[in-house]
Amino acid sequence: MSSTAMKKKVLLMGKSGSGKTSMRSIIFANYIARDTRRLGATSKCVCVKGVTISFDVEHSHVRFLGNLVLNLWDCGGQDTFMENYFTSQRDNIFRNVEVLIYVFDVESRELEKDMHYYQSCLEAILQNSPDAKVFCLVHKMDLVQEDQRDLIFKEREEDLRRLSRPLACTCFRTSIWDETLYKAWSSIVYQLIPNVQQLETNLRNFAQIIEADEVLLFERATFLVISHYQCKEQRDAHRFEKISNIIKQFKLSCSKLAASFQSMEVRNSNFAAFIDVFTSNTYVMVIMSDPSIPSAATLINIRNARKHFEKLERVDGPKHSLHMRMR
Image (cartoon, rainbow, N blue to C red; front, side):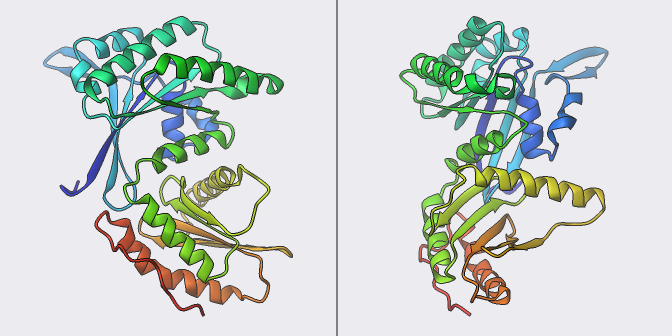
């Protein structure tokens, strides 16, 4: 991995069975929800000179925009492992952490123990990485009756925010069976992108120049939404995550047929949607409702903007805004 990479250490923690590895596999390893049922608990064993050694943390490096690399630590949640994190492995686990993501099984029968482990994590974070951002995912919400979800999540969110003080805690309700998982992870990754404000400014300029209703930027491998700009109000507040889920499933279907997904155009009487490769790390989605603008013009404008956004992805990219001639 390049020595110039900006590595961000992300801890993924929670009790065994809370769903950590399943969500990581869906977001970063192209699993679909039903395939996660065959995943086991996070731990690996190797034999060294006749002695079996268990490893309780799975490490993975995920490259995002340009130089940004997520150094993801998926920490096994068995009781023995958790106790080790707070004692013999405390400094190794909790040092130089940018983000702590703690996953709670909403239907856990050991809520008191879950909260105890969470508080122990916070104490270690305060000692070793006091500037880390903390996110709590109240997971498996699909198992809760629909009319009870808002109430249960609100109660759990209030408890977690209180327990997290003096650290700030951001909570999300999640399930592997709907778009909430993508919403949570998109929000988390968004806060790690170093030049996100500059990226959004240029995306706004791009949308205005080409007279788009809305422009979305997706990370290429995960299809998480990392930036967007809308010129017109849209009705569906969850459209980003739904699109992420749909397109990622379509990409997986293509790969099973030994085909590769590169671009798509969807058109009806109200709008046209263009999804295309944008930079080496992103896809772009452009929504147009003006019937007088031909598809060819939009595709040319996307192509013309690629070089600028490629440079912008680098942390040391250009500070000027996008200016281009509309075709």
